[in-house]
Amino acid sequence: MVRGAKQILPFPRAAVLFEMLLSLSLFAGAAAFTLAAVRSAFHTLDQTRRRQEAVDLARSRMGELEAGLISLADLRGGARDSRIEGWTFDIKSSRTSFRDLTLVELTVHEDAEAASSGQMSYTLRQLVMLRGENTPDESQVGGRQ
Image (cartoon, rainbow, N blue to C red; front, side, top):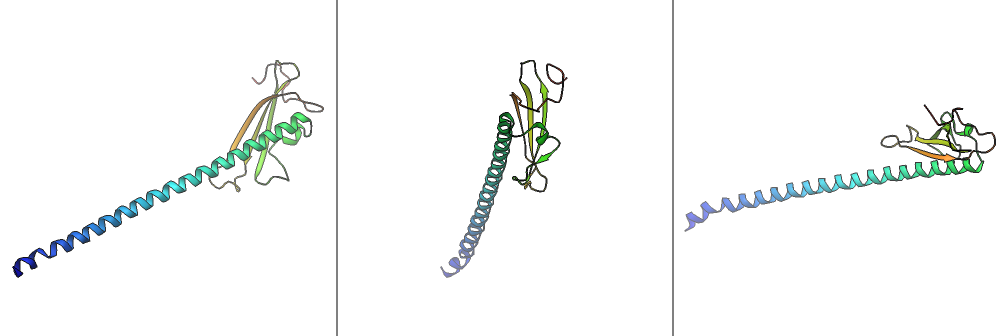
């Protein structure tokens, strides 16, 4: 019986080694999958935060424009605001067939050096009643051609 026991003995050792290698590889795969999912979630959260910041900036500038606190000229040609770092503003306006209303397209761009992963941009289009020296880009009634 001693001879038979010696011959069977290497197989359980090999099985334990194989089981351990298999469990380590499964653990490493699960860890890699979990880390990738967490990285993806953080990337998505960062993009959502940056997009929300762009939306907030566009709405704030549109409100200031409607209230007459700023003019169209303040937002033209890649304008920057000294109070806000990393964002530029561009605006287009055109007359509409609606009396006293102007179609305003305000685009907020994230600066390339401030963008961590891809440049964020948001465009807000709204009909606005402009006051004072604000005049649309185009003199044609009916909008852009």
